[in-house]
Image 1 (cartoon, rainbow, N blue to C red):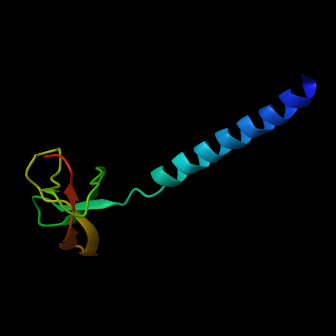
Image 2: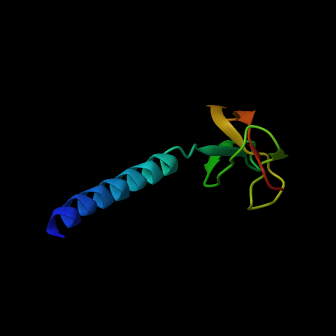
Length: 86
């Protein structure tokens, strides 16, 4: 019984560690998002957009501001972002 318990415990710990590192790598891929504010400035916002195609990703703050992936300058954002749900 003891001969089986130790290897099983080691395998279970390895599987748990692999799952934890996989989840950590998925959360590390969040990209910054930007929008044009009322003063025509490109500002960073905290919102996830998860798809290269689909529904236009808009800012939850007003429901209308298009979100972008890059800040080109203080007044320009580029690369529109999308999400799978409206």
